[in-house]
Length: 89
Image 1 (cartoon, one colour):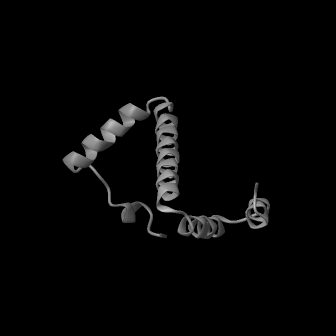
Image 2 (cartoon, rainbow, N blue to C red):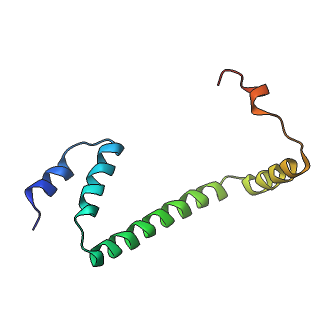
């Protein structure tokens, strides 16, 4: 059964900083055993997100070839200082 506080937290619109604070509050109250489960679950989510982002890049036509060319250019010094391209940053 959901506690009132937990149920209310799920209904309120929160920005990412507020969500991180809420998650930290929950984590701080967990037993060591449940903390291990939470850590494993968060690791799973992070890995999955990373894999999805990688897959999205790999689906871009020509991405792998362009990435490899970029690595070769960087290794051989064929690069331009970003400040020469964007001086307004």
